[in-house]
Amino acid sequence: TQALRASPKGFHMPSPSPIITSLLDTDLYKFTMWQAMLHRNPQTQAEYTFVCRNQPAYPLTELLAHINQELDALCALRFSPAELAYIGSLRFMKSDFIDFLRIFQLQRSFIHAWAEGDTLHIVARGPQVHVMGFEIYVLAIVNELYFRRFDANQALAEGRQRLAVKIERLKELGRKASRKHPFELFDFGVRRRYAREWHREVVGAFAQQTPEWFKGTSDVMLAMEQDLVPIGTMAHEYLQSYQAQGVRLRDFQIAALEDWVQEYRGDLGIALTDTVGMDAFLADFDLYFAKLFDGLRHDSGDPVVWGEKALAHYARMRIDAHTKRLVFSDGLNLDKALSLYHHFGDRVQLGFGIGTQLTNDMGQTPLNIVMKVTHANGQSVAKLSDSPGKTLCDDETFLAYLRQVFAVPAPGAGN
Image (cartoon, rainbow, N blue to C red; front, top):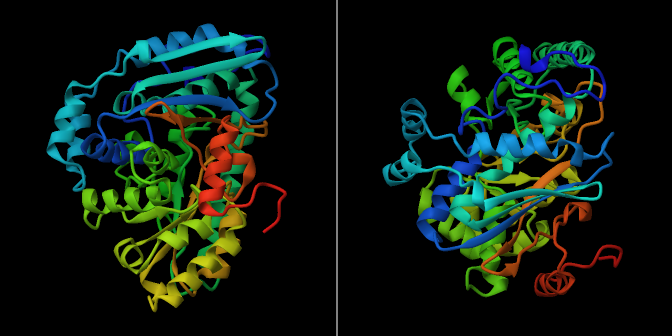
């Protein structure tokens, strides 16, 4: 496609159209969290901050002018009648939320991008139900602009070769003894994809060639286009926001999970466990929640240790783990997913969400970029994940308080 034409290194080839052309081109959990926040905490003010965690090949500030152009185009988009009809067809989406989306438009005045030296800053600030949507679009924009400076022909050739290997590797699963529960693979690669059209190609290839194991995508636009199941429930921002909702800090996870149960009443039953670490989560995930939620999602720390803790927790409560699901989504590639499947597949239902290693495995070093909620209602919010490098909060006082409240040791302090 024209958007993926080869261009000389160091030269930006303008795109014939904006990178984001549909507001559906984002993760499903943006909509599910959005609806819950609109119904439960519509007054919340929030701030989202962009960070690049690794060293790019050239300063991202060189993309600033194009990023601002893309943000202008993004904020001109509206949901089309067909898109609204699709979202409305999902049984857990309520009619008043669809009416809200019908008049919704991202506001350019709520997001700002600027440079300080070689550091790119992007901050979205305003009512949470108006700024929470920016995250995935911004990450997709920065990624695609960044990789346009490299040789696209070479990248696509390498990407297609690696994609073919993955598909053959997955097909091998059908020629070997499987476990009691099926292997189920999902695309979670919107935010760090190489480019939109490559994302579409990857998802289409898996859906057409490995339908026994490829069960859906988090990208709502691609799910709609390719008649796939849209996948997703909640992210850290949903739980973190409850740290600033007026409940006792010790009770923020309980309040967030309870509101989720009341909002969806049995749908979207996979809970995210690592906002303050797995141990602190399980202390709040009592019999009530363990029965109501269908399963848990892993996003940091050792996945085998995490899975064993989850299974032990279900066993202590005399819940049959075969009725529950563990979803793994932390930096997976296909081999890691298959290894976890062989470890757990006879004991519990499983799902594997692969992101970067599906949609940006092109022989080039991917950007490790995030855009996370850092403040809500004028105060810091944070996660204390089981991988310390994922913490994004510059308020050390609040981090220390959060650790104290949930008895989470500081990094390097031991257990």
